[in-house]
Length: 91
Image (cartoon, rainbow, N blue to C red; front, side):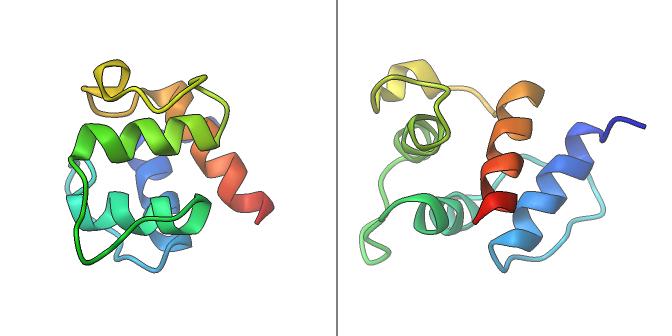
């Protein structure tokens, strides 16, 4: 059975040391920072915008060619979540 978007989000949260969520919610800024830290570097004293962190994550997993926040101004789509989860599984 294919994992749902909620399953993928929770897998990603758990793989970066965050807590699983029962309700369906997009990632918080802190969770995005944890994912960025696992895949790349992020200055946790001064967190960039959510779209900037999403762009960094998508570039890190090969879904974007460059860190362009305008290309990541939406919650992650299922295919993007699958790519993030697969990359984190490999680490």
